[in-house]
Image 1 (cartoon, rainbow over the protein chains, first blue to last red):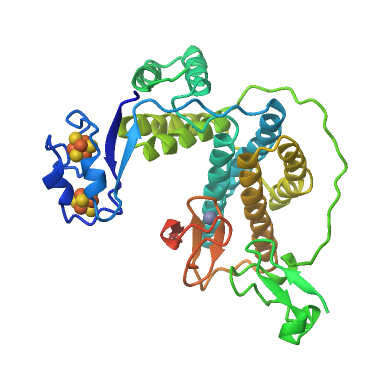
Image 2 (cartoon, helix red, strand yellow):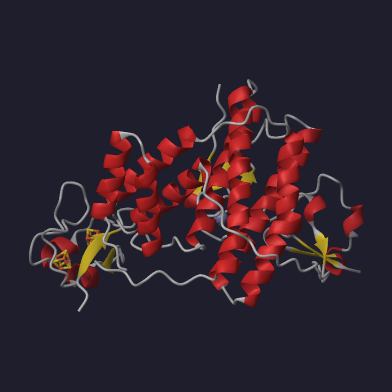
Length: 165
Length: 208
Ligand code: SF4
Ligand code: SF4
Ligand SMILES: [Zn+2]
């Protein structure tokens, strides 16, 4: 069976602490507010007891990335390309303008375009950080990287992520 | 009597109910739900038929700006899974590649508008056709949201062209989920595009 662990949504948590009493390992009581993964045995008691629905049980291993059709990916990529260019254009307007209203609008455009390309990527095969697609992507970045610190960070990510394919 | 529909939030202006012809509304009339300008409204039931253009696309190499966007997208994915360290590393990569991506030499608003037009007139239509054919509802979702947000971008640029100070006495918010830009004093209760509650809409401050 796939192992699971508890995670706490800090925004929803009302801090009224039922989870502290029911956890058999003390994993729910931490200074950061997040559950101590190294102690959690995945029994689910905290999640059942939580009156706010703030605790979810999540798997260590996620299911495989949904397959995406090549043509769909190609069309979404066209949009990504365009949004990335528009983000850069807005960035340029932001940097070269000295009118604070224009800058404010440019900032909103930078943000909006970035959010749209991020979302488009999620629908073109990169929903899951643990997927083979992400792995291949990181490996190709590593191949091209020529700065030591950058290489280190990419290598660290590849090591940390629990790839499922 | 006709009905006019807001392409952003779906609000219906029904001439029969309102007793005022849509055309007779003032030019600065806005969607009462999401603030979309009158210009964007469309009369009900007009099917747009787009010529099918399904040429094979070859996948190109990603440029730095795109690599940056993919990294920040994965950072969000890790954040949602409570993978803090991984999320931070992806954000670091996103910033690194963003700085590496070349900044344009000069940009005119016209260029930006023509990119937006191309998205609205060609790219979204083509993507929608393929996504429907392949029954990819996730892709259809991102296309539907993105198209609406892009329409708003277009309308903001044209308002800005007419009046460089049109946002002077009000506020700017961006939905952190879909990218919708809302201009108004108070944020709407939910995002008119993706329907997320207002706490996911963040204000874009004006610098001094
Ligand atoms: S029981 Fe739920 S709401 Fe209460 S402290 Fe624990 S996580 Fe927070
Ligand atoms: S799942 Fe069980 S062990 Fe893990 S934090 Fe909750 S109560 Fe504690
Ligand atoms: Zn939204």
